[in-house]
Image (cartoon, rainbow, N blue to C red; front, side, top):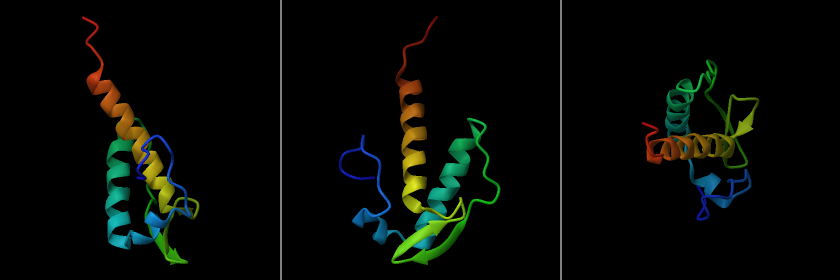
Length: 88
């Protein structure tokens, strides 16, 4: 993610050129695992190809930044849920 964790990472963000296919594949595995808890299932989710130095994922040919942004939302929700006081 970018320095400002509240701002989504854009596909043209220079940091996106630093991700390799194995790193993006690892992020996809994490997205599958975290998403499953919320009923989000992507059976064909995989890396697709590299275009202009950026890894695309088989998710409607989305840029890897989409994966980072989805993970940020899921991580934030899990963190907020873990930090919420008990209702008992």
